[in-house]
Amino acid sequence: MERCPSCRADVRGKRVCRRCKTDLAPLRNVEARADRHATAARQAFFSGDFRRMRFHAQRSCSLRSTPGALRLLAAAELLTRRFDAALGLWAAYRRFHADAGENR
Ligand SMILES: [Zn+2]
Image (cartoon, rainbow, N blue to C red; front, side, top):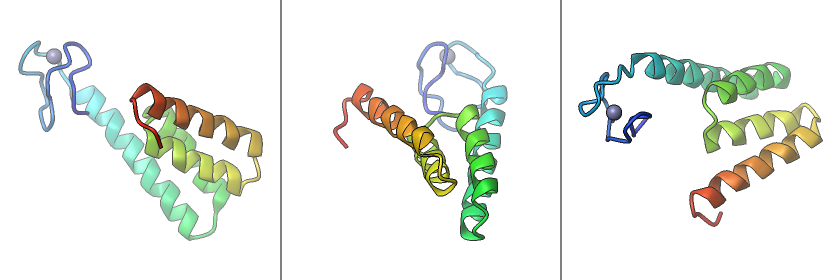
């Protein structure tokens, strides 16, 4: 997390927002859980267990819907032959970039 969810101040590396004093620890814990699930999904990919990859990618994405989490889950959906779900995630990924003013 780079910005405080309450006041948008820069909070990189902080546990409490310096401006509004929001306790960021619960959100940092959610981010850490999302990162652990993303790591587990990548490990499952490399071991060829795509169902387990999808399980962890879904958990990661539900905790923190970043473009990287969307891409990971879309790949897991493709590898488990859930093409409609993969297409929906691709559309969400494209919207994420469109909202950010990017053209990828
Ligand atoms: Zn703040």
